[in-house]
Amino acid sequence: MDLKPYLFFEGRCEEALGFYKKTLGAEVTMLMRFKESPDKPPPECMPADDSKIMHCSFKVGASEIMASDGMASGKPSFQGFSLSVSAKDAKDAERLFAALGEGGQVQMPLAKTFFAQAFGMVADRFGVSWMVIALP
Image (tube, rainbow, N blue to C red):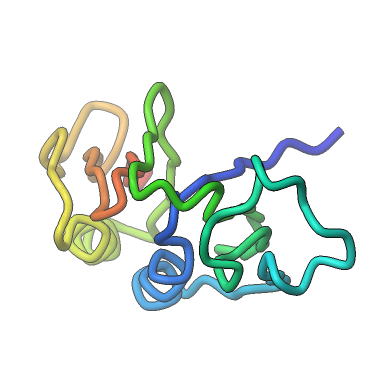
């Protein structure tokens, strides 16, 4: 069994991919736009702009994340979960935390804890919540 997160960016998927390439070294492994689909999606599942991303897959390290523009409503809603990213050390955690938080919102400042060299929570500019951790 394999479990992968699937994120709906509601029209900002391409921008998010560029951001994750820059901040996390993400590598896009598959990308299909709505206009490239061999079967036309039903109208209720089709955004107004058919150049939006229907489905993509990208890797961060060994982890795979899938994403889409969804209906491109412009209103992504990422609630009830966080993605956790492991840093090599406290300095790497600071770098990741700052990069992910650029244009976003700190939920819990990065700090040393009883369980980690560094731990913090930040929502990125798309609203995706991240937990950055550097274990001892």
